Length: 115
Image 1 (cartoon, rainbow, N blue to C red):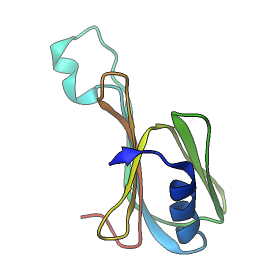
Image 2 (image 1 turned 90 degrees about the horizontal axis):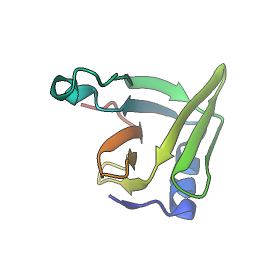
Image 3 (image 1 turned 180 degrees about the horizontal axis):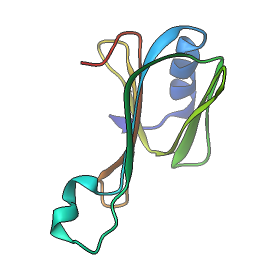
């Protein structure tokens, strides 16, 4: 993964517009490591292989970035995006790393289900 290049990410988002795709969206603030500090409040969200068709998608901000995908009944939204990759399977992989380099958010868009 490399740092976000707005024009490249926007082009990849546009590539999937109006097509059926699978979404993986996950956030965490340390949910996998709460056993190290019991006073730390852990939260997160996870959805995998949600089949959607978005009408419009946009990446905005000055970094870290926000990505929104407009679906018929609402929005899919991720904030804190810092890195991206289009992999060998044609999937758009977006990730947000915190200031210490730990993964905080991921939004992935794929033409096929995630394994």
